Image 1 (cartoon, rainbow, N blue to C red):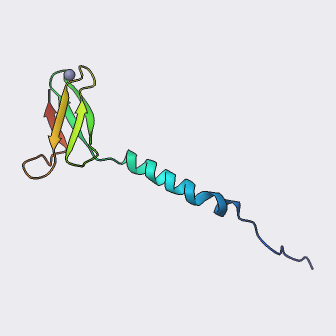
Image 2 (image 1 turned 45 degrees about the horizontal axis):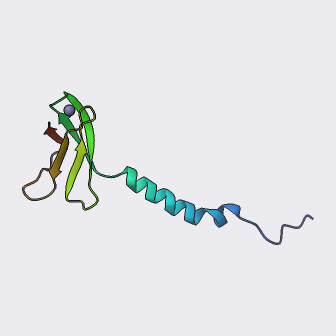
Image 3 (image 1 turned 90 degrees about the horizontal axis):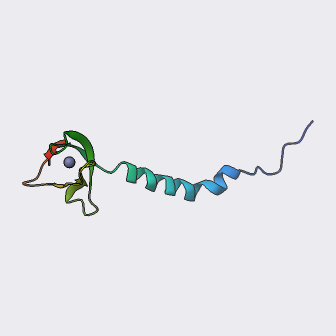
Length: 85
Ligand SMILES: [Zn+2]
């Protein structure tokens, strides 16, 4: 009869909690809300992302650098698409 081990060492359980939290934070950054912008100045599309305050979407034209801001909330836009430039 073979005897089982007295203890089981779970390496995964030791290292993962902090890593998992970090990954979640990174993922939430990647999931930042964005809207698609039609930059009329250069006839290109790109995404602009919500600012830290969550009050507007802000970004720049990838070609000429024109700034755009789409306010969120009352009086703002709820559209996923936005014309700028
Ligand atoms: Zn442009």
